Length: 312
Image (cartoon, helix red, strand yellow):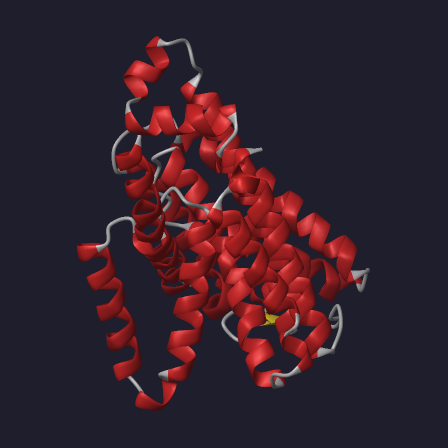
């Protein structure tokens, strides 16, 4: 309950309250941009749970995102069932895929876990191309239905989903499970010596990450009305997710959403500069990583806690 008395909680509450009023006075273009940013915020938060706390670098977050997105899209395309049912099945498919991938991947050490997840992304891309009749191939898969065509409604859905996801993931990170994950990420040998089942806790974190990644991926394609490799599976998308989490602040969860929103909004507003936009955003990300290893939120929280610690 201590979190509800912190400055971070009140800042987050005010930000969400202000964000919920944006449809009243901003354009549909801005709402659409933020809608995408909020879904990417969930991608980044789910990734940070596994890396920031469990210490496992998942180089293939788009495998989990893509499985959820394409499963939901294919079911809707082939059978025309309710988008809500498709979204649920997409999330469950990501959970199953994540569980199957994590079982062998978590038993390897060092960089091999990351390489395993990266290979999974390449396999998914190849599957999409080979089975083009089912997946739409390189052209993309058309989604017949959407949740709503209202820009305001789509925005509120994305904002509500990101807010609920942030509350759940942050609460989980601060729970005893999160503490065990953090201990296992910092020193797995010592954590194992204390009697904790490291593999079981990391498997749980991977499955939770898979659920939120798949759910966000499915929601995103029903917002876009299409699923393609470039939007939900491409390695470049995964890099953006990872950079967003690092920018916002490792092991903060909430900072990952902040980093994702910054990346999406900055990239869009710098688009008139052409190829220079990627360079500018990448340079900012590099400077943050070099001079503020804790990211945006990590730096702000350290400034808040340092004076308090000095008084004690």
